[in-house]
Image 1 (tube, rainbow, N blue to C red):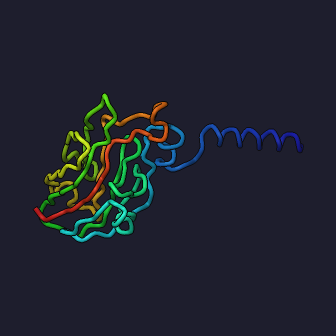
Image 2 (cartoon, rainbow, N blue to C red; image 1 turned 180 degrees about the vertical axis):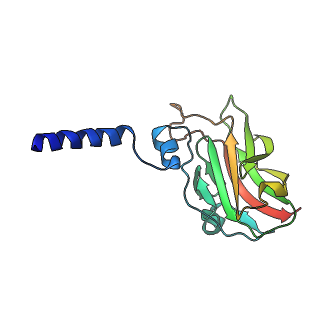
Image 3 (cartoon, rainbow, N blue to C red; image 1 turned 60 degrees about the vertical axis):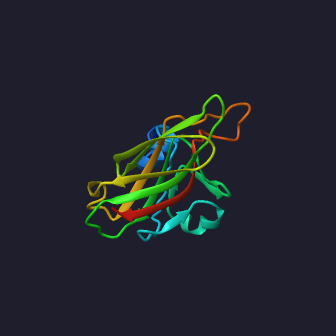
Amino acid sequence: MVAAVLAVSEVVILALALHPDVNADYRAYYIDRTTTCLNRDALGSYTVGQRVSFRSDGAKQAAGMLVCGWSGPVADGTHSLGETSRLRLEIPPLRDGLTATLQMAAVIRPPQMSQRVLISVNGIPTHKVTLSGKEPTTVSFVIPHAAFANAKALDMAFDYLDGIPPSAAASNIYKRSIKLVSFRLDAA
């Protein structure tokens, strides 16, 4: 009897180990490895028209907006980490679109001299940019109202098409692509 209970327990434990009951974000990051961006329940407060620094001086305000795919802010900006990074912020109800203005710099490691970034808002592709050079570039684009019309939050995803992989010469990086320096939204 005890042996049967033990055997059934081991089968149940093995089944749970092979098919764990976990949420989709956990599964995608840890088990399936289909993302490098582990979602965290973050929702930053933001006032339209406000510029947020992603350098060390803006760490406190920016921290609430950083969902995943970022390393901590340093003097030259907040570095992306992995294949995707996301920001999430609370927005008031708006009737029109928004203009996003971001200051970003490419992470360069020869022979790769540029970084392509696809930016989406609430799952809708809104802008594609190629960054080159080490100096920050100001990027502005319109976010159509349809991208956030019924949403209480604006979830902005940055997909990196050219992330620099780790190597013997740069083993402390994991697909670094950009440095986000500042962020601003204005009514369009």
